[in-house]
Image 1 (tube, rainbow over the protein chains, first blue to last red):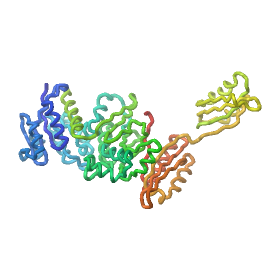
Image 2 (spheres, chains in turn cyan, brown; image 1 turned 90 degrees about the vertical axis):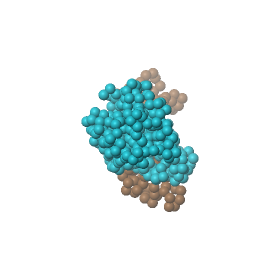
Image 3 (tube, helix red, strand yellow; image 1 turned 90 degrees about the horizontal axis):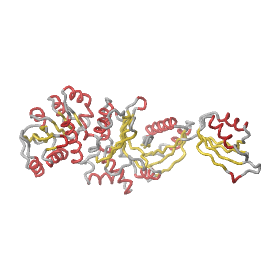
Image 4 (cartoon, helix red, strand yellow; image 1 turned 30 degrees about the horizontal axis):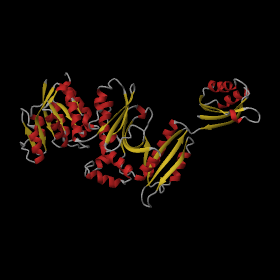
Length: 336
Length: 167
């Protein structure tokens, strides 16, 4: 069994989710012949360090109670100086700059450390550079949690479908938008009302622009385009239309004709037909992409295997943690 | 293009094969054949209705059928084969919906065949569902692109269907 020292940068809901799952197994993951030992946790207030392994359960409890004792060391200091094997980078996303996550990832890769992240900003901004850096230093940069939470999109493209040319990916990558559109039509409620309700339930942020204007979906699409299709695109290259101007009447008219409306992200890399866009689209009610509620779904059109669909929970701390853990286990079970 | 043909056959054996052979020879794909035995004409012939998908050579086919003594009573060409539904949201009436429809109809390869609207209030955005028929898939793509351009100019949101081919 190989032992991996893990540093978690960002101790919000995702960071805590990862810590919780690791603690629940006492750090032992037999299926990957790996032991994960958390040696550093950082948040905006400082860092908790223990080279022998942090007592996670008490750290989680103290974090909840607001009594977590930190040393005054910034996340960047920890990333630069602490001894770890895998950096779990789960800080909040900045769509435009990718910071501060971008600096953490660059620093860790440059030091020859593996990186697992759920942060879309750095990847959408600098994928090519980061990939180059990981190759140069012979370490892995994995980001399954960035597109569709627990839904294994990159994993699927990497292994089971390897050697199978993927022609396009089309999907629902934002649970908030899907919740709003589903709720509007099932309860016949106007957009504004459903949005307020989604905020109250915690499905939508206080400033929902990022979700409802399609930016979140576009970031995920950029990561998919670059990572799965080897494109070199940025957020500005995506044709983006959000859902904020959709009316209940439009949804009813669609429904009368057998359709639901979904915010669809679509990437198709080839030539003249090349598509990179996020927009509300009509989906036949009988189509597998017509998933309800907060679910995410991705449809990959492949050359040999035909159409492959995955459906799953796009968000949630444990679901996202599951995607991060799967990346960590992939690193643990890789030979190099 | 899809063609519906009403033919009349003599009531002697082998006539149906004589009628269908030239269609296959002309590269037509026979979608349906209905034999109206019970509706024999006053001339004693039997009406049949054939639906065929074929690209060109319709005149030659008619001549060939007639030279075989098969009466071609009626030929209907359905040119608009591909149908698509699109939603529009915005100030549809104020931005002249008639002009929007006219622009599509005047392409010659596509036309608006269906329109359903909802207008909740004078100053509120309207929503419309329009059905477009086009002569083929490429023509439909062109028509949708045209509608996209019109919508951009008139500041309307258009909601297109996903490509469901392959599913």
